[in-house]
Image 1 (cartoon, rainbow, N blue to C red):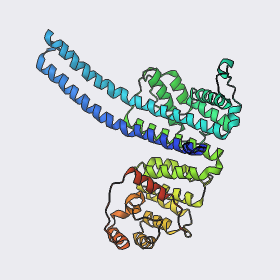
Image 2: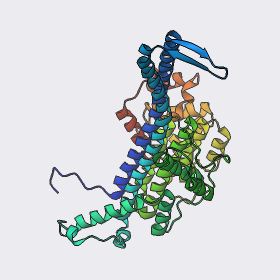
Image 3: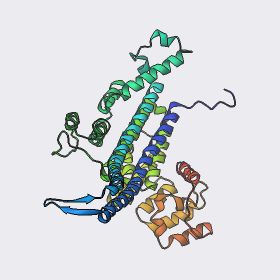
Length: 428
């Protein structure tokens, strides 16, 4: 390898990058739609005012009994039509834009699934070797080497799977890997309805089809019992919120279950990825999503690269419940484990989550000598959001570090450094 060539990444490193990219892409959609709808609401209100102000000023009302109509002068007709068109366009935009965001969510999932399938082929090439895809001789002679031909076959196979229905995609995964990935998956009915709804938006102007009703019935999806063929479905804010969480949850879980199953010797990368993602969710106050992931990845049958990483996930799971105002579950989670042999960082986390602040202050004084525990953690980690509010905290902090406690905004680079430090092993 020359000095200018980038080192070849292991497939798990590529998958880790793909997972982060996937979550960032759908998060972008999640944060953008509400902003766009606020803007469109303002636009609609303004076009409504201008249109009706024009009618009030330039028309003559005509009462016909059942409804009121109005008459316009010929010279005002063009301006009336222009304002009416603007008003109607704003209404149409408010109806169509949420649809497009739903289709974009599913499209991002489809693209991500394609990358997950490529990971499967990279780790388990026998699956690709068993492919029945054929290469015509006229195409074969154009490939420079066997690797190029293999890449062609891989692309054909990925395209073949992605073109299946989303239910069939999970059946393909079960057939190739021997695992029913949708078993006991609570979000499965939501996922099925969402992907079928996406098909309605793309192909049927959002109007219910018999296929949609059939598939939703088969998978026990929660749809209105009064929904009939031809009815037009709409996207309200709650539907989009549920869709975002469902796509996020299923995408991350699917990728990680496959990663841990096919590459068990690279669990540290998998643990680091989940810890980083869930930390970020907690920091953004998306506690429900963090809980969905950590409820799964802290189960007893899930293997981890180290006991430290497992305990970090458990601490994150507990604080996600606490900040979601479920203190009882937080305490139950912490009580299931013996923490007596854990280091001071874990004991500080326990004291904070159990609201034993005097114990926390004593641990702060001990940790000031720990070179792996930085004072910036008190400003940055969501773990300390309630501790920071306590009356004695600022004075204890100043006693430990010889400076007053001040909150400040972090740069993206500083956030990355904080997460990396958070992932450092705890001193025993």
